Image 1 (cartoon, rainbow, N blue to C red):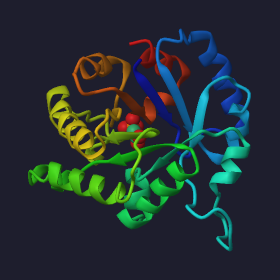
Image 2: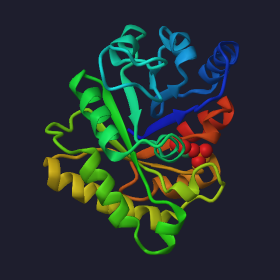
Image 3: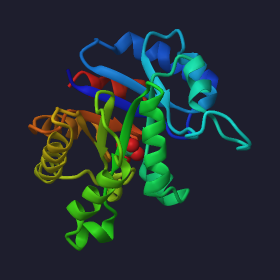
Length: 235
Ligand code: PGA
């Protein structure tokens, strides 16, 4: 089944989240595997809502003197089963490097979570024809020492397409997705789902999903509106 993951980023209060879930449940036809990545403060609104959900961020250590951080055991207690790692906003706005991202991937998988590792090139890298070099390096480093890909997913998110309305052309996305899937199949000898992210919306989603190596979406902006997100999930 298609995997459609929402990434709310820093949006929605608890009141907003409750209203969203009510509206979304009315529209949801159960036709996709849905995952909600939401802010820490609304995680427990999802605890008994019947949807798979996860955290947008976490610290790789189980506990310690890390003021302001949240650990995996804390997330597990709320019923979280999934985590994001390596999102471009964490990489480029918060300075997370491949080393830290790798620690997060290893910690998340090691603690039994499903991990979505995000990779993607910036505009200048895209224009310089370096997309695959960048993505391969992020995969190699982010997945260093990962032995078991059972609970791993990748989201290919070209940075220039995130939140810009400038979605990748389906054939361009497909080319990168195919290389990622081939690389993963060689590395792990198994199929790892690869999502596409970057201005995915109901009106461009169908053509993207029609591509052989697009297993679903990681959706920012279009996940904030329950009707729009439900429409994407029904594609
Ligand atoms: P977007 O964000 O759908 O708003 O482009 C995607 C993401 O950041 O995961």
